[in-house]
Length: 205
Image (cartoon, rainbow, N blue to C red):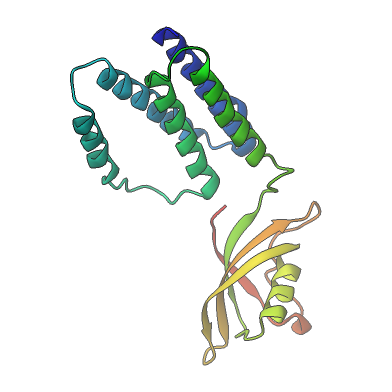
């Protein structure tokens, strides 16, 4: 297959990935340039290495040097990392000669199908994460989950107690939950039988 067909297939695949899947589902427009640049950058580098006299060992060494660079940016969620990996994979498939036939475009289609299914709301319902400071030291996990569900108005999928202060009677907890359709804002002043107030420290998603 001519190389320019693979290049066009990669460009079409990254457009579908970013503008057809990621942006409508997650709406983080600031990551669009990252995904596009990553994909095109990998495509160009791999194509240049494949068409030059540079040895494969040197090419792998260059990628090894790039892999140790730590980008100081905000923490990404798992699905955002998956989209990064998909963008890298599409760029590699577009830049490498996978042989005759439609093997390269077929592999790109497999990546897109995997992302489309794995990130579908019906397959993986969206969840939110919050860090809450509760004005009671909770030592019973079941009571903690029930209290947080009343406050957030959703179904708690996991809790992680960061700090339980028995002296000051507070609990700092990371909560992952799925909000219900009628869920309201975090309660600032629950009733006395609910076990005190809750103060959201940081909404991560």
